[in-house]
Amino acid sequence: MAQQMDSPTREALVARVRFYRDLGMTEFYRRVVDPALLARLESEPEPAAERSDLTSVSVLSQEESAIPPRKSIPAAPEIAAIVPKAERAAALQVIRDEIGDCKRCALHKGRNKLVFGDGDPAARLMFVGEGPGADEDAQGLPFVGRAGQLLNNMIAAMGLKREEVYIANIVKCRPPGNRVPEQEEGATCSPFLFRQIDVVRPKVLVALGATAATWLLGSRQPLAGLRGRVHAVRGAQLIVTYHPAYLLRDPRQKKEAWADLQIAMKELGLTPQGKG
Ligand code: URA
Image (cartoon, rainbow, N blue to C red; front, side, top):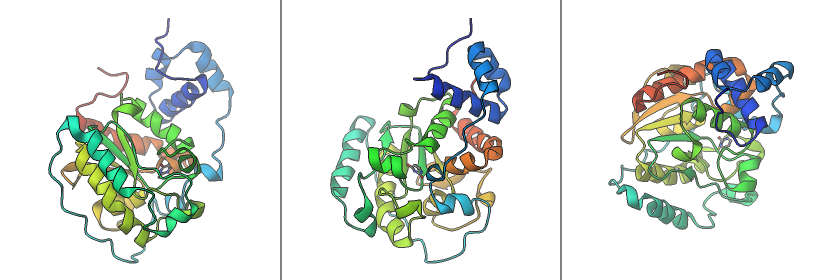
């Protein structure tokens, strides 16, 4: 009898198995997945990504090219004192309350819901994306659309549950048409993210895509030069990888993303699924 993987729906399970297949983890999913599901997977074509899933122009165009220098990235605030684990949820709520019904930048004009962040307030692993898309704007939660489903699969492949990590974005309101956040928008919003990072105190931060990497590192560099090594940011080890929306567009890069996540796993002392 095949061992069941934790998954709410068969659709999500099929997507997860596809992801493992794309990573080359064939042996693993063949051992744990119901054979009937595998038969279905092999008989059905993968649904094409829709434009609305593909988040932003930056995700699509800048992943592998140099990011042109524009306005400067302001220096990040000083790292705050460590908050005891038991007080981190409350400390995050203080930041959320301070943000309030934010009108600090123009992004508030098109907002339905502000997307603060989600997950374990004392997570050892934190993911940072670019900014909410349509689904996130509707629900007020980060990464809940198709890119989010892929991120969930990436988290599961690392042997973690989504609720065990913390997820946030560079900007908390959806940029119109999912465009790249402007310098002023990132500069206004990112200090709140930095405060969230200081409260959560993750051991490992994963920057999803060029925009997250730029704002976390405080400099614009091509993603290719940032991947494959560990950077130091706010007391955490930062790993840079592709944005899940980019991986939806170009699934061939999933193996590369998996290699990046394995660096993160090594830092966290995690064993890849299906091994050990
Ligand atoms: N893309 C992002 O960068 N963040 C989200 O929350 C969703 C999609």
